[in-house]
Length: 433
Ligand SMILES: [Zn+2]
Image 1: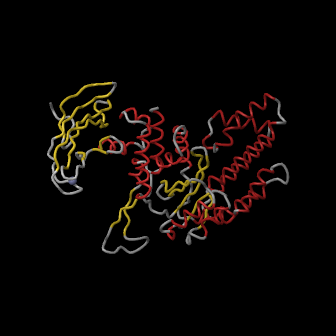
Image 2: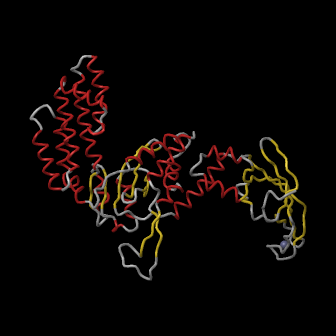
Image 3: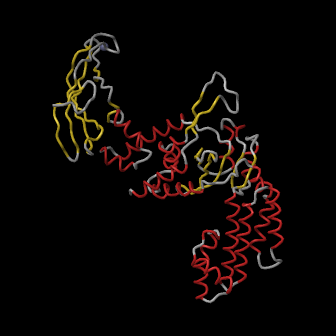
C-alpha cells in the first residue's frame, strides 16, 4: 500500500475505521541495533509491544497509529530497552507532528474543537497549549512603547490592566490586576524604561505614583475619551433628574430620544433625531441647554493649541449658570484637579488618543465568547500571542534605542498584536460560532 503516513522508520501495512477513528497499523523498519546504554554490550531483539498513538487527522477524521514496537535486550546486564521512535512524543501519546499542528492552532481554535478533530482529551490539548504559552512567555518580548496606553478591561470576571503601544496600535502587555504593586513590579523589570515618553491613561490617581519613579522620561496625558465621556455622564445625570418631574408619556419619549443625545455628536444625528432634539428644545429647554454644554465641552478638543484650549475651557466654565447645571460644575472641578495632565494633550506629538477603545470591545468579545471554561491566563495568551495579529506588529529598528546605527545592524522588532486585526479576528470567530 502507498505510504500515507510519511513517517521515518515505519511502513503502513493495514488501515481500518473503528469507533470514529481511522486506525493505521504500521510496521517498524528495524534498522536500529547498537549497544546497551548501560554497559555498552550489543543489544538483541526481544519481542514486540503493541502501542497506540494519536496522529494528525486524515480527511477530517481523527487518526490512531497502531505500532508493534520492538524491544531490545542486553544479554550482558539483562536490561530491556524500548526501540526508539523519534517521531513520537512519549508523554502525550501522540506524534510530534500532531503536537506541532495543535500548537499552531490552539490559540485561535477552541480546545473542544481541537479535541474533537484529533480525538485527544480536552485536557491533553489544554496541556499542549499551556506548554506553548509558557514558552511564548519566556521568549516573546515586545518593544517597549514610546507612547504607552494604560486602561482597564473586564476580562474573565475581573478588571484587568491592558497596556498598549499607541504609536503602532498594538497590545503591549496584559497584567492580571491594575493595582499599584502589580504595576510597580511590571515597570521595575520592564526593559528600555527610558524610551517611554508619554503615558496615556484615565484619571486613576495611584497610577502616577506607580510609574513616576520607574519611567524617567515619561509624561502623563489623560486620555481624551475618558475626559469627554464625563460630559456625556453629566448630561445623563441631568436627564435622570428630569425624569422624576415628567409625566409617564413624556418620560418614555425623553428616555428613548435622549439616548443618542448622550452618545452622538451633532454631525452624526439623523433627520428624525434632529427633530427629536427640537421637541426637547421646546418642551424642556433646560435639558436642551445641558445638551449644548455637553457639546461645547466636546469641542474643547477641536481647538488647535493648548492656550486656546485652556481659554475655551475657561469660557465654557464661566458660561455655566450659577444654579441648575451642577453635574457640569462637578465636571469643571474634576478638570481643574487634573488640569496639567488633561491639557498636556496639546503637547503630545500627534494628539494621543485611545483609538483602542475599539480594542477593548474586541477583548470583551473574546472574553464573553470564551468565558466559560477559559481561564484569564488563556484569554490573555490568546490575545497577546495571536499569530495573525502579531504579523502586523513587526518592524525594523536600526541599532539600539535612539542610537546611531553601528555596523549597519538591522534588528527586527515586534510591537505586539495589532489591535484592529485582533478585532477582525474576534469578529470572524464570533460569526463562525
Ligand atoms: Zn547491558
